[in-house]
Amino acid sequence: MAMQAVKNRLVHSRLLLFCALVIFDSTPSSLAASRELLIEGAKKEAELILYASMNLEEAKTMISRFEQKYPFVKVKLNRTDSEKLLTKILVEARAKKSFADAIQTLGFAMHMLKKSQQLGHYLSSENGYYSKEFKEEGYWTTVYTNPYVVAYNSRLVGKENLPRKYEDLLQPMWQGKMMMEATKVDWFGGVLQLMGREKGLKYMRELAKQNIMNRIGHDLIAQLVAAGEASLDIDIPAPSVDRVRKRGAPIDWVAFPPAPASLIGIGISSQPIHPNAARLYVDFVLSLEGQKTLADLGRYLARLEFMQEQMAKAKGLQMIPVNPELGENITEYSKLMREIFGQ
Image (tube, rainbow, N blue to C red; front, side, top):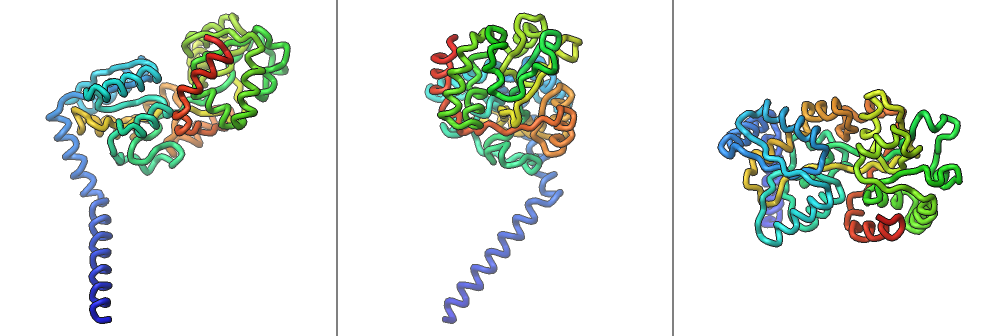
């Protein structure tokens, strides 16, 4: 019994020591010291290779702000669309050649990169400002969201005729008057998530009977709708519509609540050449300063301070994050979209 009591006291003492170390490690002075070490390491590396699938002008703006803040790091951008970026990283991994330091792309792809062990573990100092549904903690966090809405030409479609729910798009009045981007597997997966797989697939097949025009590129489609080439676009992110509308074009959007919101995440590579610069960039993008820059660019954010204010400005838009684990169905979704909508 005496020996057991000694063991219990020893365990208790070790537990107290562990707790004290944790508390000490999270103090402002400790965090500041860690920050300084990160900055010193990034200065020595002097470079960052960023793989991203975001809008080019937005990417340039974010990189410019980062380099203004940290002029000792030069960012090299490697940009392509999400599916090609995922393939590129996986091919490089199989060839045992890792070039990316930081990766920013669709949540579907980020989940698959984590699953294939291509993302490194890093808990950003900004982690506490993001809810659990917007991250796979310790691996990637949402930079911004893409809520999918229905765009409409405000000269061709009166308020009284606006679709208010998914089923409204099946009405005869929209036959041959709608566009879509039939490669958006995240939209497709989001609708199936909301409706359920069986009902969702049945809906998609009915929707395909509406003779929908397929086009590629959010910004191009928004311009085509504004020009009257179609009355509606059915799978477009709200920011793409906002950008064209702010230039005075006759276009706006309506959402079917809750709107499926695709997540765009950021994380570090599992084998970064410039690990300190990668962590510094991730922290910057997720910081209040970085997120404010994205807000000014019209993005919908997941950082807690912005969400309530943002939704108030966006017509009370209700969103539901598309589950990143659905990314495991990317190949199946792509095949189904080709079969149903053609490409």
